[in-house]
Length: 617
Image (cartoon, rainbow, N blue to C red; front, side):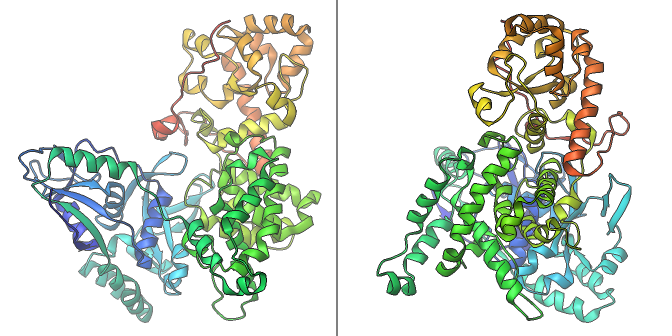
């Protein structure tokens, strides 16, 4: 097997993918990257940072004849033959091809799996402030170029024409490599000096940006390709920031001169884990999460103390963690450690008792940092209520899905003062939160943060188990083996032709003990409720009162009236969401208005696995 390791300009890759010179072997999986990951990829390029290696196989090999297909989003004339097949790098090159060529519309999805079209723009003024502001400068806009809020009623930003793009100061990413069209767009800008500087400082470096390749030649055997393909898709070890900092801190001369020993970050992390051990819900906190909270507090302090016109950026990006000094770490380690322990009690107060039901484990990073900033004020009634609103807006607005370091920063900068009641803008996480009632139809498994959130909110209403006279609090939740189960069983729903979207929706599910769920089995509610009464030794009125703690009307269950039950419980869950977020829910449940039904999501993100406990007993 022969291979080369050339460097190619990104512009050349774009030329090859759009012409069909580079195509995919047909067995490659489909395009999967989400919106925020694509945005971060563009930020990486604009900063001039490396994005990794791509691997390609030269065609014309007599032993290997993979059927080719175009990069997704590229339309080629029939019979277009590739020169190279892309073995590794599909997600990156597909994202870049769609975002940087043609109309710049990328067919992607958000962190919840909702399908969408996106265009990407660079705010020229912000980009020119320096590399550390590039993350803030790159934005994503709906495919039509118009950003709307309030369920489409209000236009926040309109970039639907070149004139409006220039008026708002946003350069379209699709023109970064567009040659004469790029120059013409910039020439029409009113601020010629800014346009010229942007070309020199931002566009020209992009034109020189290169990506290394491994190119396997025609002599490569089928067995070798199979081995290579398996290796690159399994993935290797990523750069471990924690291990690099461990080595850096160990070499801190000032610490050694004072203590006559090296500082071991690994040992200190073990001490943190021991402190977290009594709180099982914190087992999801990783060492890099801890460092990100430290970084937020370190950089926020620097920014507040800086009196210049350009204070340093607050940051929790992984690459910025390497800038932490040992003094920074030692200043914040104990406050952050204590704050994470506090988050465990915060979660318990909101009936989140185990890691699998934490909606967004990464949301604990800003929550801990915010707690440090608030100190004891975090437990004041008014402040705690504001923190709860922010927390639920992040979950039910589904805003903490992926690549969320930018949101970390916005929250640590704005939430503490807002929570204290100061005259300050509403935090972006609260402002950005929206929820459509039709989303409840696609919330089917605990893959979704909002699903877990609604589950916890139902528990927090004082839900009691149907079989045992016990509230589902922290201790009894574990003892009773509580999980979420169908109210109208799947088998009954299938037998009676209930729409699968309604059958599997969280509206038809509730937290129950394992024994109660076994008593329900697969029969009608009118059959299982008397069975529960007998086993629990209670009368129908007592059981009806218990069922009501789950936001359900037992009369509708006893009548086996699924539609009436569903509509009534849907309304109560909507009220629950509105109370938690402090924001109205759009009731768009008609087919004509539906915004977030299951058909609008990637099927893999709402796939339902069989419930092993739902056999008739």
